[in-house]
Image (cartoon, rainbow, N blue to C red; front, side):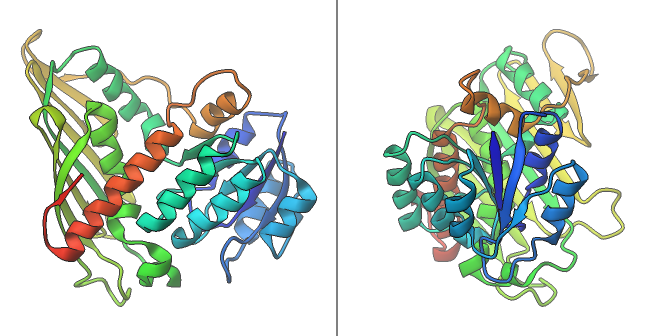
Length: 329
């Protein structure tokens, strides 16, 4: 099976880590998906795995010549949809950085192209596969907190110095669709509910000369069955912090409360007194899971429907923040 990499601006290492485990994959080609992308890091990563991919200046030429089975798409975020549509039209499976689109119009176009293709698509919501989030999800699904009533999700990153494309909405897409998409995905994934409304705010103030990039955002969601969820999103984590990110999730239900923080899982419920730290399940890899679906050996935990739906929610949350009003679904 042949894999091609288009772009270098996202989490292509999900695929590299999956390929490391699979000797039946060859990295056949790499090419930028956006003008000015430096593909040297992707090339070095491929070579470190023992592959010798062909390097192209144009991804369309690469697709025609290499004829890959899977394309790993992680160019400038505002270009994901355009590239993914070209890939799907050629019947190539698409493993796409999130958000899969940064406008409502392109999202609808991408969904239409996908519906006419026999190829698979999944967005890179790889945090679902970490040991702590997978453990937490299985605990919730086992009934450990009862019926979910309230959810609070947090995504906090160090800002550092971001690439130029982060400074423009047209190429970046916004902090809610980029950083916040994980938090929004958790609310959807854990609850299984549908989003009904959102009121959000975001601000680019104090963004250290990063143009239009928002460094803080807050989203309040109403979901079906009167479940409420919030997403706290920021680039305000100090550079001295011990890790780049600080991911947290609090799920409050009718039987107890579960928290994910510091890459650990804690549970309080009606079975045992006190707070319990839950033993973690093994880490998994999203690309390995995607490969199983491509090979018809299983179903990927992240479906194309999930990828499209969470993207839509992100875009509506961004719209709410832009327009300073409640957006209904």
